[in-house]
Length: 378
Image (spheres, rainbow, N blue to C red):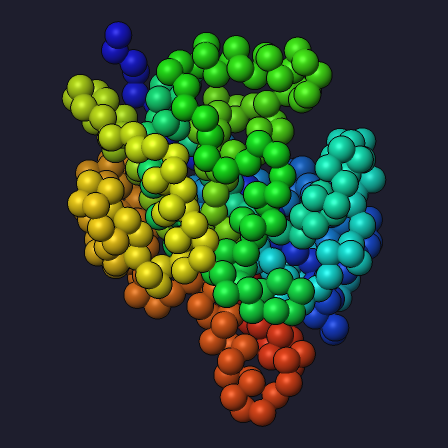
């Protein structure tokens, strides 16, 4: 049966950490009036997150990537302006370089009380932020089919976005330590493979019927069928301090989905590899970011991220042209050339140490860099 081409609408959600501009520490209890002012100025597109030191923004339903960029710039700018009035600033990074999760408080909302009660220390450690990209795919079965195939590319997207090399003041040796924290939760990682939306719904109904979950919103997979919207929701990526990087990753994701749809329309499809193989690349992206390459399973060997990104950019060129985001997709090559936020954070830290500064000086310099980058290009 022929399926109509999706609308390819786009929505982007980002989570930020709120830091005190004087101490560079996370603010564990920001003024309630600050959140209310953000909500009022953005027509409720800004929301509190699980921890009070976090804040979430989400674009409107956007027709194209250009509109999504405009929304994200406006949201970042608004949050930064309101936060500055309170001596604070948002940082679009997936971990704070040194603040302690033990010092944080969770937001006073029933949903978050339940989460804290059910998950205990696992929830309390969730001092992490991510970027979620929604792409409008109206047909239920098509959503599931695209999710099955798109899993292959999740490590590639993660590698482009890494921004969490530090945890509690330590260089973790990972470019995305965020995933190490998030993977402690149940129902995370790669999604299950389902042959249809009906099969997916039957499995969800078992969990709901047994009283294990209330709804599919707590299936925190790297990619999923959204609970609230007819979208494919990509959740694997770190949040990017530089807006252009975030938009490039989002543009690449929507182009990957359109490429997979195009293959399906032509009676082809991307080969689906076993989760044990894709998870190897997921770990490589988490550990090394762009530095050590990923496995090309068709070739059966590790290939540099530079070569893989060149191939992927060429693969989706037709889709980027159709969706009007060639420049944004091409920017992913720039990310590979000069590195991600994780690389820049580590360089800044080491530069201060080499100049004779102590660890706290170096970590403060990383925070200052993140504040500056989050507010740049708006």
